[in-house]
Length: 246
Image 1 (cartoon, one colour):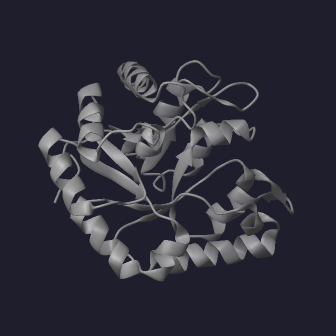
Image 2 (cartoon, rainbow, N blue to C red; image 1 turned 180 degrees about the vertical axis):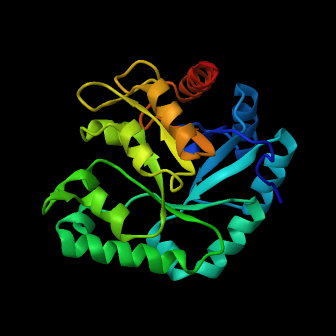
């Protein structure tokens, strides 16, 4: 079983969704990620855990987490847990819930209860990954802020989506201290469109400082729609390492 690094400090990973359009085998894909200089990967779904675990061991990568749809988590929590064990995944992430889960205070409270119930099925942290639609107003607050208050689960804050929604990602991380072990480092333009890390409007140094102060363990690079996925991944690690050195 592949396990996370033991040393203190934040580690770097890439969300494999970024590389979904590369027509290469999983071992070849992991080899490229390792060669780029990342510590680990975050899975976008799980395929053939034993083979993937062997390939990760061969190139020295570890698991930062895994995105697993909420319906799949509900349908077979024991089966998902076994796959996560094989890969040494430290936390499971609900990657998306549609806007119907956040339309008013009552539905947000129901969503919070659903996430807490899911979390109780696993012996590792369950995190929720935001997009921008969670930041709609419900009553006197936003759906995201109410979700944070009403659920006990952790969060994988996607700073690009938060920025696109008009929120300050660094301030959100301060509010999530102790509850954001994983952060998605993503950049967006002023119009909220995905762009290469370091070329958009996200205050990356501020985000990384806030993440460090909040106890974040993993900085996970992601680009939703890169023109050249591998070049984007290589640029991503260069930018992240440069910011970490500041």
